[in-house]
Image (cartoon, rainbow, N blue to C red; front, side, top):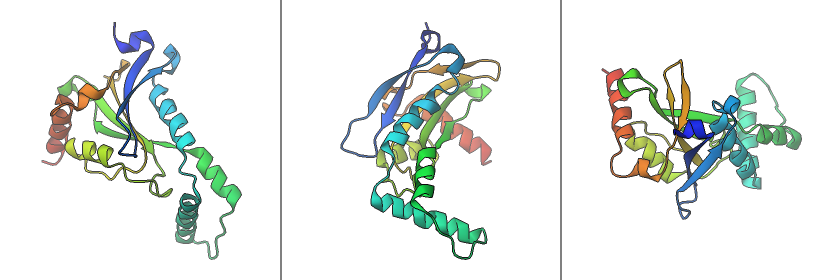
Length: 186
């Protein structure tokens, strides 16, 4: 029985705190929520983690003011209430490391992170950054990260397990991701 048929799947959580171990997490979902299950799981964690320290809030304030100035505002003011609203929005950025392509049987691997990680001045997640680089997508990941796998041939969408074993040695999904990138750059 596939993980999708069970109404649950395993994702891999990688804390930005390098002293914490990688953690397999089980995500449960109802049949009508399979597509958004991973995003909702990540959003719940990222909102709680927040990056809402005083230093992070001031970094966020400076970033918002800079964007407002670029948009033509002469003397922008960013209130604490505005910062609270922005922090509450906590949008998940989905980074596709292996797109679902026929060549690799529509298997896809994605990373889920806080889309405002840089603005919130979250710490660099060295381990998640190294995984992205090994998969051919060098990125500086900020804050906590989740890795997940799914099958999507545009007719069928199914969540699949992604755990610690998917980082052992040089996993096939990483080789496939590099192959997709190499084909695009030709």
